[in-house]
Image (cartoon, rainbow over all chains, first blue to last red; front, side, top):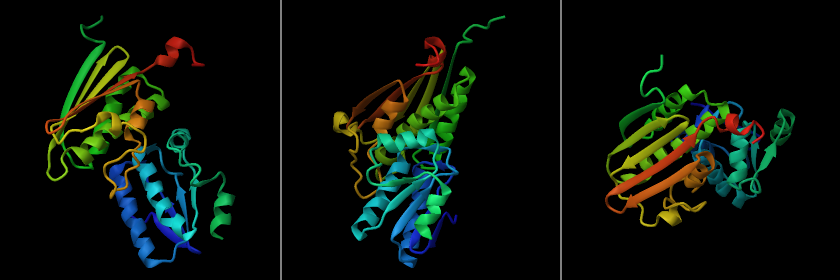
Length: 111
Length: 153
């Protein structure tokens, strides 16, 4: 619970340790709640805690991209071990998102 | 002293098509493979491939009902074979279903990358499906390939 928080119209999603279809659904529901409560323009997915992911994690990102691109928002990815980064690349989502490689850059987005 | 059958093992489990079982099955897969001393990369690749097959069965096989899914693990030396079998609706066009980004569930957030990830993270993927009867996905993973071929491979 409580993986989403909003700051300056930016939704920051701290992803769970394991992102499978079950966990992705939970995160998605929480995101939907944030969208109803706040005005959101950009989204940061924070993979720092995540050690396991399958294609459900890609679905989760793509779903938010579809939501935010029509309103000219941006989706950012941060953190993520080698395997997770390999999956982003394989799924071809890197041209839809911006990867942030340091916490300073994350702060720049929402401050 | 070497026991007969020491280089082989097998395990079968039957579970309901509930999403919370995804973790139980992939964790079991990891434990089953752990006797071969896999690298971290090998174990996460294997878990991801198994997770994709199990998730597919859970999401697609029984769209309106509950149903059972079987997971069978077999180890022969360094080769691990996994069979994920359901007795659900089956796949009409297996070739199409394995194409990247293809998904029949447009309302749900599926990336359509399940089979692509299975093919990337397992050494072999085979699908047998009969519409109305069910589907079996077979995955083969060889553990410890790096040691045999040299670390730079």
